[in-house]
Length: 152
Image 1 (tube, rainbow, N blue to C red):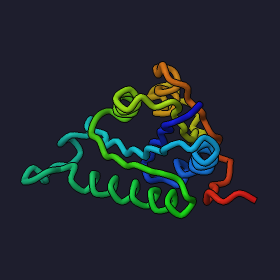
Image 2: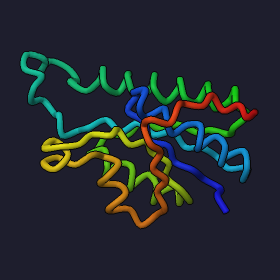
Image 3: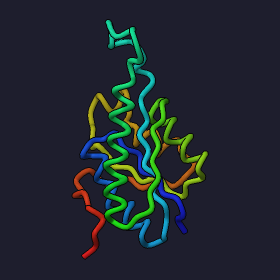
């Protein structure tokens, strides 16, 4: 049923809440977990005044590499096949493009539980992926405790 499962991350604890579900599904179906960090390229040079000498997103890409590698270690410890990637794009677009390029069967994401004006004006990455993706998306509540991948 599932051969490839995509778990996008922004490195936050909230994003990690989806891991337990993804790891359980991967073990059940002998699937590969793809861990993706998308560097938000809409940030560009704005907001990073004075850093024009060099790559203003280099530190964010490094943060992304650290985030996906931390999850990859957890996946290997949980006996789950894993692959990692760091991309640069708008987050929801990068997630959708990666899913299409790798023909993933399921996208597993956490909800941040944002509400109010912020959500209405900007929307969340999870909400945009859920609304715009043609692939199944499993949204894991942020109140679900992160699982280290070990079953009882």
